[in-house]
Length: 113
Length: 114
Image 1 (tube, chains in turn green, orange):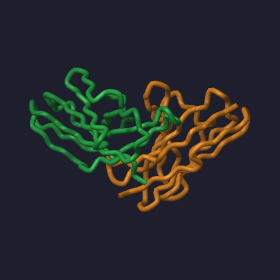
Image 2 (cartoon, chains in turn green, yellow):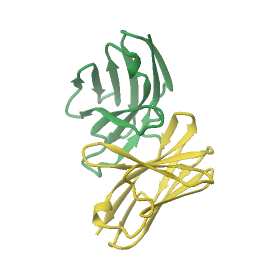
Image 3 (cartoon, chains in turn purple, yellow):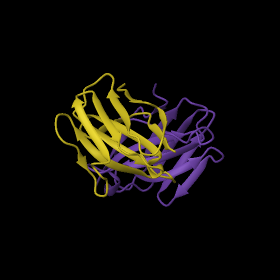
């Protein structure tokens, strides 16, 4: 079953504007959430994470928001740059259980110059 | 949506034994599958790229004789950890490519080597 869902397979944004990537999950046991970025022909690289005790985590241009009641998280990239063009995967784990990750299907972000 | 399964979901084995992990694309054919290993503190490491009917392409530093990958059909790839040691204990994840740059991840396999 798809415990982590990214319903938008693609997103196109103009350079300098905000990119918002969304992710929904179904398992209430998940307490740690991550975003990975993947360039073609490379493995995913860790981008940013958030624990369920927080509702926001910021790292430079990247901010992740967590809405536990809605079981929803989002990644904001401001300002977007052409180098941000990649596939973004959200992942979730239940650290209190076994720490194993579940991934979404990914969203391809294209930032146009 | 596309579904990828892994079996087993977790396995405990003795040091020196071999363990086989299966990765299946349930409702689509995947010419390319990928194997990853999750290291502590979140990082995923790409181990190898598996193409149906041909030899897998291993990433630098991954021992191909230790981590045997077979992609015998368009819906199945297997990873065999040979002569497993405690340092091989990890979380192994596969993904299957539906079309270019669209990967669906399996639920992972937790391996514990005693």
